[in-house]
Length: 271
Ligand SMILES: [Fe+2]
Image (cartoon, rainbow, N blue to C red; front, side, top):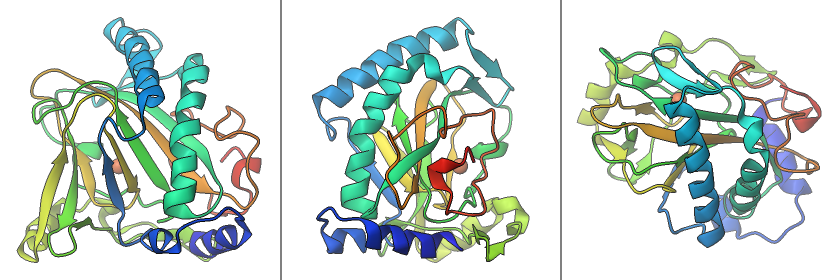
């Protein structure tokens, strides 16, 4: 089964009231930016708490790996309480206002972007090439301006919405490598001529950008300062998980970023 079919089953199985006109925009409004006040006070105090812990770990090179591209946190569950509380705020919002189905968190990354000589990896224009039904929410853990590595996405000026790359991993019925390993830097000039523009997301700590993983996007290398984020990735599930996030089914850098080809096991499988 492909993820789009599974998502339809999940929506049919979901009994909470939703606004169908909002849910219909799932694919056509793939990138949503939320300002730091959007999720309220509890969210902001959790972000601040997490930010304090993570700044200290990265500054002291504690529980992290630096591969010269990003500084990656390798012990995210020491923040289990804050992570769970944060997910308990943002995931229900996505269930009710975006997906219209149950969700669980399958992946969390906490990282700091770095200064680079040249753009590589996620600093190049790309899409992730997991199925379109996978959404990542990136929460800034410090204030981000033009100089400290804003997230950037490509936007269509007519629709004023993000644009999606050509996904080639859709599920068990369609799964093959993306052209050019889903790097699209060579297509940007043409897309700009067709009316697309790059948009950087800047804002204070707590600013969040929530995007279908196939939105065309990139990170920017640091010019000055640093940028810490927590990246929370969700997947549809027919049956609600015992909790939104749990080390039993939420992984980090220790597992590949590629989702299970089969959407059906959902949180009952580690990948
Ligand atoms: Fe990416």
